Length: 80
Length: 417
Image (cartoon, rainbow over the protein chains, first blue to last red):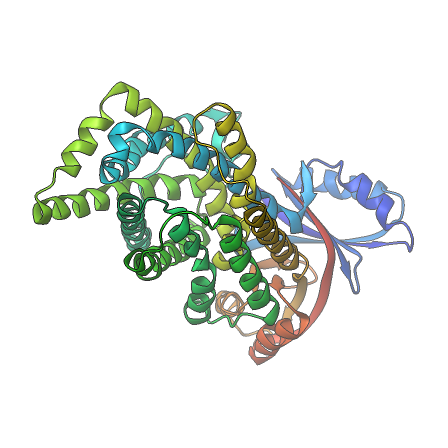
């Protein structure tokens, strides 16, 4: 299983509509709207890199998404 | 299903409270059976003895694999794979939690067996939230914020008002049992269940289902020992009575219903303990008092329990108490600040060491080493931005390996459950 954070930049005013579309994508475990350089952070959980490509492709097809930066998780420590 | 992340913790804790309220209803019916009314100690043993068998059976069913994933992972806890033997690193925590649960239950039985109306005394067990705040300040080195103290006090006194009964006597020795035995043991039990949930087993998050199974088993062992010692000193036969009652089919089935329902309440409670502090969890759990009302009405209609007081003064006190509980919980829910911190590190510093240092910072809930533009993505959760700055940002700045970082506050988030 591969996990990755995808940092997304959105056109102003398109966030709500983009979130609605993102919630339909199956492999997204978490979606967060953030304030700063990026507008949205999503956490993808996929079986392989090809599936990850599919997720980023779906994200980039959403209206309003202008840029995605993918960070593949190599190691993790978490409370949950 | 994807739901707001902020609400997942509250969904788990409140669902656990609703199930716990149902258990309270069933419990009052089962506890009122002649064999248990005459011997609450036998009831304590029966709970854990039958509970161990039922919990193991449910866990075996939940271990069934469906399309590469266990049934338990699909419906209760995504971290659950299958029933497993505990690891050496978990043993100490299980022994403490099991011992505390056993003492707590024996203390509860001591009150039930001596007081005609235990609700007068047991309402003071809600003060456990304040015990937890104090213990967390010491054990987790996490000083509670003003909001946490205010909300906890509101919930605690609300819970006392909502659950207190105006009938029944006020017995000093029973109050002492609540303050010296029941509250501290429950607080320690909750803290150690949380420690177990936070632990990583084979580099994966620990699951709440195995934690519950082993807690019931250890509680059963310790309750048996405590009752055995108690029987020797008092010349009683509670342990034998508990065992004899447990193997009777009628009583076995009754206790099995209680313990199978309790299993689901506890699994969700343990899972929520992994997501938030034990004090906040117990404050939300005080809502059991509210959810118990419809179950009490159903039991009243079925003739299982006697008519309860409808004195107007009593009702006003209860409504004030319930309002305070709801306000306190809302106050907790609305005061969480979360943020992502994107970090770049200097070359020449081992990543593992930096990762451990980041994980050691209070408020950090996730540390991930990533490949890409950033070396680490850290997620933090705190009550106020000021606390986030003092407890997290200043500590990050102290780590030599960190070259630069970006703080990005979370405005809203969703999680797939």
